[in-house]
Image (tube, rainbow, N blue to C red; front, side, top):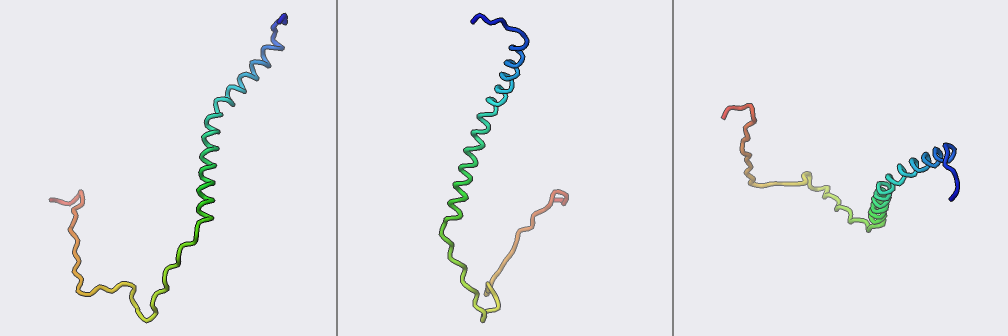
Length: 86
């Protein structure tokens, strides 16, 4: 090549190499984030373009209760806490 290397050539080249190296180290992280964003956008698009679900039927205004239980028997087992004696 025939050129003599001095500080005016070496220092800018070294600074350029250092800045490019840090950018190239971030390339896989950026690519991963981009693919995650594209997948998320596709999911959001699918959700927004999906068919509407059927609305729930209106409650019968003549019935005052939503649920009615006749002859029901309920019980719960007692669970002792850590500070209670056995």
